Length: 118
Image 1 (cartoon, rainbow, N blue to C red):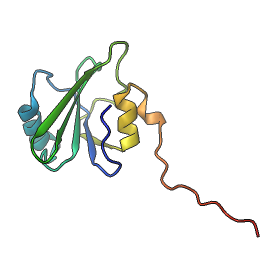
Image 2 (cartoon, rainbow, N blue to C red):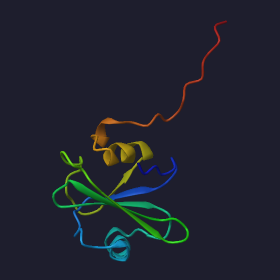
Image 3 (cartoon, rainbow, N blue to C red):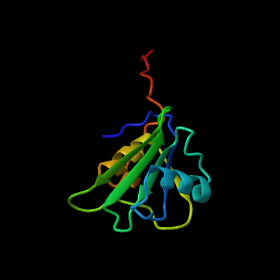
């Protein structure tokens, strides 16, 4: 499991990409089409046409890291195919990466503080 920090920017390219592309080609695509700096530390998520594969690209400070995953049974839950980019939370990304419908999970914004009865 890839687990970016809770404050990481996670950008999902909504249009499928050619999965023959490697790290440098995806970095160029991110810069040109998505307007994202691939060397900023943002987690860049790309989908395949068949929706059963995902590529994740991130700059770790010393080089580009490319992760490729294919679901054996089923497909990832993707947003509608439109031009552009969608920002995900770390919780939504974790659900997507596990093959769960990421639209049904929500990160807790704040942990409630217990109150003392008076």
